[in-house]
Amino acid sequence: MSRKSKQRDTILKVVMNTDTHPRADWIYEQVKKEIPHISLGTVYRNLKALAESGEILQLEIAGETRRYDRNTDSHYHFRCRKCGLMLDLDEPVDHTIEDRIAGKTGFKINRQRVELTGLCRECQ
Image 1 (cartoon, rainbow, N blue to C red):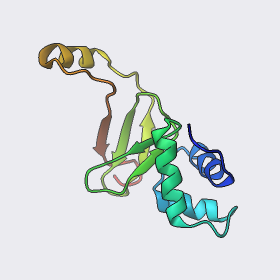
Image 2 (cartoon, rainbow, N blue to C red; image 1 turned 60 degrees about the vertical axis):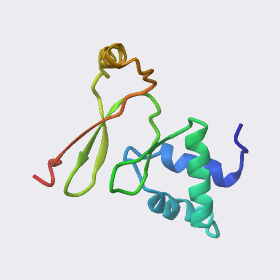
Image 3 (tube, rainbow, N blue to C red; image 1 turned 180 degrees about the horizontal axis):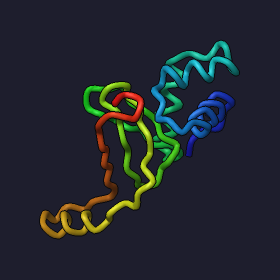
């Protein structure tokens, strides 16, 4: 069980109040507006704790800085290759693929993460 603190509550509030998938440095800048003396290390530690407790998702994308997502349900993402915009897609998750792969491999699949990449409207 995670400890409640003003820092953790403020960090969680920042993540929950954005539709984007922010990086820790952006979250840090937002939290500093409310808690000026907070350190970047404190933000990283609390983001890790929030992700471990399942309150937010930590997205690790090869070759990129971690991002954080308020939506902890299985869902798809779109990421713009040019500007880095990352958004949730309002599309039902196909869970049948999990059953097919589990049947073929014997793996126990807990979660799927699909990321579609391309160019957003502004970057096209």
